[in-house]
Length: 412
Image (tube, rainbow, N blue to C red; front, side):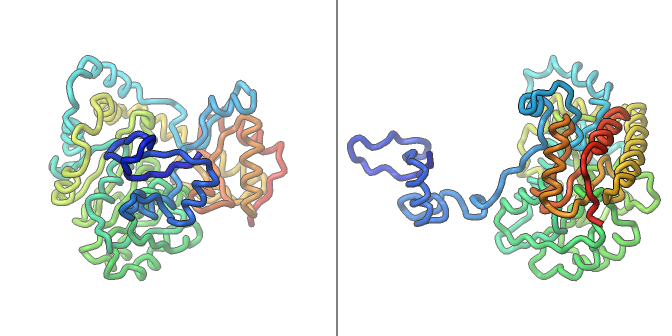
């Protein structure tokens, strides 16, 4: 069935009015298609577009497939999920304890992340006015898009950037411009050359999802010299903890530029993807404007408590980083021994490059049939690539053993 929206006519037997006095009518699919041929988006009788074309053309974000879904589809009991860059150790124990302690306050409204902002400000030697908390770093990213982009502004980033950012930026209807990767890295010199008078936001992820690569201090310093002060840089550091000990890595908190907004999350190394808690650092004027548009009670009481608890869990952080380092080393070496092209990674996953889209899709399907979930990257814009998250030592071994049974081929 298709959905058509009309205004009321007052005629007898017309459909009931919905919200805003609109009539919602269901038509057979063929009639809906005929209606769409007249107009590219649903319109009111007045001719006003109900859905902007840039929203109609979007594909919603598609999350990685879940364990229960694969168990049902393939009729298998054991499934290893290596598709969503989650912590295989589970949540931080101190975060779980903090969440439990917060439960008796659930009848009260949250304070908008104020407690977490205070803790983060103290840890990073900032004023609370320089810190924002939200429902994952993507929640803050969404607020950045809403707060700072005007109709004539442009967004600039790399090809096949993090899919969450792609969806959010394109949902604003502004011009979205990209430059190609250079050896699977951000091509910062080319990005700098593409900045024009309408560029408002440049999005950089370091480490980058989905490639796992980083740009260096020297590369970022040279890039920044070419960025006008009026241009905002979103520096997405969701995988910061995995790369921070690399001497080449440019920790944004050592820069603190007025036009850089740093985003980080508790979803990855702290194992809190399901609770949705993230944070950002920026100049107090930028944060003040972001606070005007964020949801007033975001993040939730439980999410805030989890974030504060996780920050104190140094032992869990150490174990998680140690496990990930082993996993990266093992997966990279083992997959290359199979003749696969593996991009060097500084995150908690590796990206594998196949000869073409069909090979990547086939490998994904055959691994699913063996109970191994990986992430195909067609939605990112890389149809010939897949992404494999690090798991436990056993998970990683099982993934490699599954691949050894398949006729995999390198793109090189």
